[in-house]
Length: 406
Image (tube, rainbow, N blue to C red):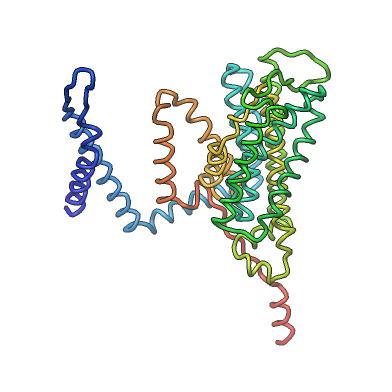
């Protein structure tokens, strides 16, 4: 009853606030005023229902949080068992690989292109996951490294005719170099200050590309970029799309392997220590400068690779492809999937890229749905779709010392 009363007050207040905009329409041509009373009724009804549902979900979360947590914990445990036990992991991996292999053979070129875009964002999400998810460094300018890779291939192909396979490692290397260049000035920064500096870096790169016409051809962009070659074979658009698709499958597998190995490596543990407590990490003797620069450079390397593949796929790039919105989408993929979770980031990338394509009927409400989904996610599941369990390490020397004393 109390919830109904509060929801009713919210709907009345919302109707009052939106009254001048949604009800009154002034026709300046005929000099008349049109009163649209039905709008205020719909607003009142909608705000009442949303407010009531929101209160119900919040009350349910507070009252039955433990049971929901147990249910979520069971799902997480089941996923971890599938991912760690070979008897589950190998058949599941083989099935996914077989499905990925036959996908371009049973679908259209349009579907293949959508899937290539999703796989590019999987790469970008996993790259940013190193910086944000593992090292805990909030990077809002990640798209700048993506642009560096794309323009590296576009400019070298346009001016010198260099091919895709030659420029691919160069794009990754230049991305890593720019990651180090960004990393040096922000070594002493963290949290909000780091986010602001990286945001500024991303905007600087975009503005340079947009205004330095002699270098990047400005807003007109660079066209006729060559697609990847395959031993000199001439390929049409469909064949080239299928080829890039298989190339992306291989790149994503390599990315997953590398990021997974990095997590279990010495530098991976240093990143996680840096994320949990920077001061304690430094007190334990971990080189903070080296750890941060490694995170920025390795994360930027994958963005450089993805940029080269993006330029080869679209054959045209301009600065409009590398706005802050792209950084926000990639960061959302990492947050939605779960900080540090490889499987979660992959799942989130497919959700964030494929759903808008298949729900084009709601394209006008895309950003509204996107914002509402992110708010709900942060309220009801802040750890992401698939959270990463905290690792515990036991000092074995303590048991030996105890045994020796006994």
